[in-house]
Length: 261
Length: 185
Figure 1 (tube, rainbow over the protein chains, first blue to last red):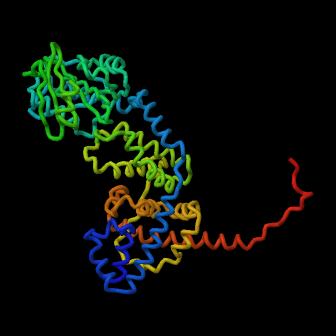
Figure 2: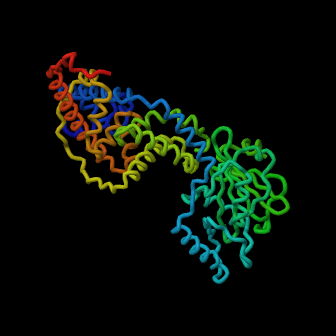
Figure 3: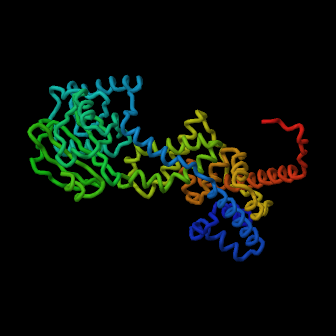
């Protein structure tokens, strides 16, 4: 490394010392100690960088910016921000066609998850889901880039109405979660079965995701009492009532789930 | 990321995001809009981020993408190799910078082409390493280093120009308006 290369590297080294221990700068910083001219340059460079950084910290923040951000958040929570664009509606038609395909082609064991803005009633002839296929479908969706809320509202009645309109299961929200505001909802399909997703905003700012599917869609639906599991980074509770099977998922902890149920 | 409280997130990051936005957007209103947009995106998509340690980079990346998107312009970064760049001693003394108004330094920063300005401001905010800056701007590490080096040279040139303008302005003796010529009101 020559002096010019050392200078080029050191210009990316923050003047507050945060980067001094990074291996990328070790050789250049060692060279600084051996080369008085380079050392003088480096000291002057750091002083200049500190002066600019300090000026940047002096930039005044508009007094009302924070309040505006917080107000914007509240408005967004109350207003559905998503409208189905025409191209996506067209795509949904194509996806619907693909959803019908299992009726005519043999199904595979691979889990297929389809995000449908307009979910369809379960198709006759759609196979009953093995539990692991259903769970894989849910987790694939949860971890996918496609996951989003098609409708946002803190109002459970509006969320339920939106889901019903799309023939997606609504079921019964567990007792303690009734008082939590929802962040919104989405509907998607696992192997042709409509699954509803309702996200709940928790007091600590986090979220809990409730998935609802028709009980008849599962080959071995969970029992009436919640069964707590850990799947990767997700803590889940699964249970059923007369008509629906539920999965509640959070990244927080199993205790968090127990508090909610 | 769900464990992060929205309000705490805003409190922790909005000042530095606003400063970055202000350097990109060139005016207060656009900078405020960009900052708010960033948190708005967070409100709808933030729960998808699983690694809480990446929230700061995520916010800066989002703000930068929103800026690019808002401008509706394709950015074509010229590829730059990690080359040796002539690095002279800063021609602007730190004391000179200290004496300048914050607005003047911001003007100097904003006079630099955006290609150099974005990494430079991220560097001077001191919140991100060169590797993180590369991730936020989606450019190679070598390019970050090259742009920081050239950006600093451009900043010094801009500061020298501002300083020269100030000195020229100081030599102008304001003309005193005779009392009788002043408008009544």
